[in-house]
Amino acid sequence: MKVKIVSFDMYGTLVNRMVQRPGDMFVILEKRFNRLYHHPIENFAERRAKAERELRKNGVIDLNLEMIYGIIDGLSEEEKKKYMELELQAEYDLCYPNQRGVELYRKACAEGKKVIVITDMYLPEELLKRILEKCGINNVSELYISGCIGKSKAKGGALFRFVQKTEGVSGREILHIGDNPKSDYLYACLNRYRVRFIRNTEKESYLSKFINSTKGVCINYDEWIGYSYFGALSLGYVSWIYKMCCKEKIEALYFFSREGLFIKKLFDALYKDKIKTRYLFVSRRSLSIPLVQFCNSYDELINLLCVNHMISVRRFLSKLSLDEKQLEDRLKQYHIDPEAPIGRIPDKNGFFRMIKTEMEALSSDQFENIKMYFERSITESKIGVVDIGWTGTMQSNFIDILDRGLISCEVIGFFVGQKKKAGDYITKGMRNYGYLFSYKDKYPQDLIISGEAILEIVFFADHGTTESYDKNGPLLGNMDLSGETRNHLQSVQAGIVKFAMQLKDLEKKYHIIRQEDVLRQMEHLFRRPETELVEYIGEWDCFDDRTIHIAAEETLFPIHRFMKGFLNAGWRVGFLKRNIKINIPYFELIVCLKRLYGWLYKTCDRKGK
Image (cartoon, rainbow, N blue to C red; front, top):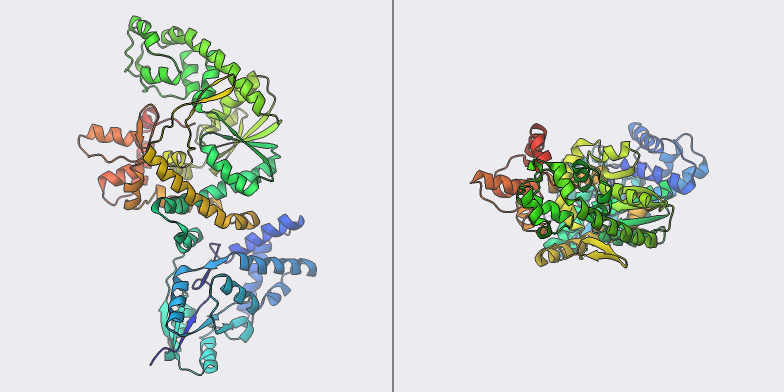
């Protein structure tokens, strides 16, 4: 028998909501109500869900929003009215088309089938029609709603029988498409409908569903990487920064170069009219050199520069901006090999005294120049500084320079995350916060830090690092990204912007991006990356006195070369997956190695900011 009608379930089939679970909508409503009306109502989300459950438990089928709010205790009539208005608006705002369902809808229309919608829903028909039209579904002949008709799909399929009778056709002449295994599959089959089941997994996050339904806006693979993996992180991060600024009463935000430039552009797109923002040219080196003159020992110098003891003497001198050739005679006098690790220098304090005069002269000059730069740039008494992370060393040095330069200013840091070492600064009184994780959070810290080089490179600005300062301001070095990698990153950042612009209004209104949801999305990249993605990103590189590959291709033997490649990789999960090529839990393996052989990582890890 020929199919005459194609019927669709609505939620989860034709449209999706920007929430993980239906109950999350009520949490969003509660928070929005409290922000708008400034008289918090406790436990609204729980009470709203409970009222709906009670009515359904009592067998009410013609359920509507007025009935639900009618049995919520503790709300005045005015509050109920405001909450219902907010819920109706949120339902409209937070819905978007489900790409799989919409494609089937278009196919049905193209074949000339009559299209109807059958849904168990308490919302009014007018709103549901508006939602469908918003999602591009404007050729629906009939809309059968349980709350209006008093019959339900889930109650033995009564609504299916009502549709057959109303349409004057048999069940075999209707193809029903839906995602609920009971109401859309079982009861449709029992009423002899033809059925096409859309399988939705609860494990798939609402962010993944949204990305998969809207990724068509990306014009190339690089944009898709930015859109899929870094869009939610970036939008959630800048939204969180603004909320923290309001909480802390921040007067102005200073974005540290270079990662801060892209973050600033994104922040300004959302909140430029809310708070002053400035871009500050600083780097680990430029904030360290002015303070070298105050070091009194080798150990103090090592801690200030955040270098490990395996760095070569040559690289160490380079980080101090000292000329190795000018010190050549003294290095020979002390029998110091420029290629040797500084940790193997026998007389470390003798080495410190050897370079102290040159260090102090350079440091003193840089201190005066950076002080003038800060005096011209910083005019507020309470500021926030934005940096990707991770330990707070740059913020600590920044504050130290302000204090020694007698520039009075309270400074609070806002990072993507905090490494464990950040706790040392915090216990000493420095204030900063991590968006995705604090220094106490073990798992998310392991997850994100395992690919920290990717985050740092994705947010890079298209200018060189801040090397030093003269009396006119910062002096920049060469760009330390290859031209090919820069081209990739420009497209990646374009993808991030596309994601943020699509959701910026919803995020400002409803705060839909949660940290835990961003972490789930980041797991796809840092814990379970696709092979194609590993091969692609692995070719990106940058330079830090030497070339650093994100995940270079390397042969397993000789093993010492493979281990060197692993330790130098910016993305170690990607490095192992790209080169070992078997399906094992690489992230968990790396975490175990880090726990068991902590001394190796302390020695060989690149230090964070």
